[in-house]
Length: 313
Image (cartoon, rainbow, N blue to C red; front, side):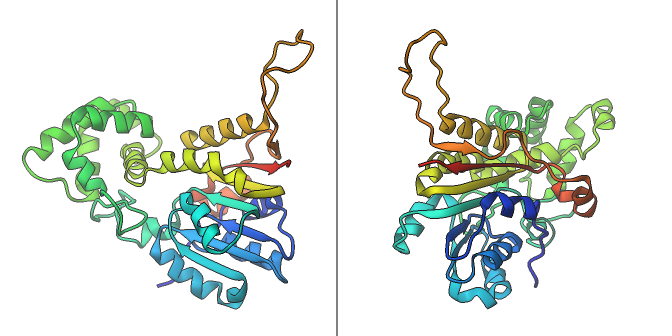
């Protein structure tokens, strides 16, 4: 089965990475290999791409899709937070560019059978790495009511988190909640009808997103990686993040601002004493969003946010 996915803001991401022949780049989330292929096309001859993905299907597909570039490619079935260990295995200290596309792929939603979508009946799994940790069903059926509310409110920004959590706990007292459609039905039943009518998106959208984030520990991974990644760049190396909801974008935005190292001393101080050191130069003062033409061609791009920075030393 072909791994299907259209890379979001491919041209913008590649431009911000400043891909050059002979250099070393990392694609932290290979997915359908659209970004990876574009990078490889620009770093030959002599360049190397290190591709990482938690999804074993993505790695298997990338080996086929990127076969013409095999001598310039190293693929790893792993979480991008382990990039320092991966580079150590390759005897590489620093790289020239890092790309992290944090979104779900079309293949994961439509073909994985792991319950990322409420549009079809599938097991409540939601693990990007099918061999790791707790599933969404484990969380839904074992977490406390307060714990479920916190997940839905914090990760999904769901207004009706308390009501939905209460309904889940009531239903699971009678039977285990097993499938995506089971959960979607419970969510719809828990929400006031007037609130459901006002929503432009399906009522289950935010809860499903929150569970996926919790299952895969996505925000914890991003916090950890965004703090460490700049140390893996050569001077002049670039890092680019593609995020798809406000919590991810906020983490990247705040991390970049901190690394920019702007002085916070009062303006009347004769010299700087705050000790803030500039580590990166922002390439995107404002978030970059996809064009309307891209959104029309690929609706999955509609919520994408791109931010990029360059290491200064």
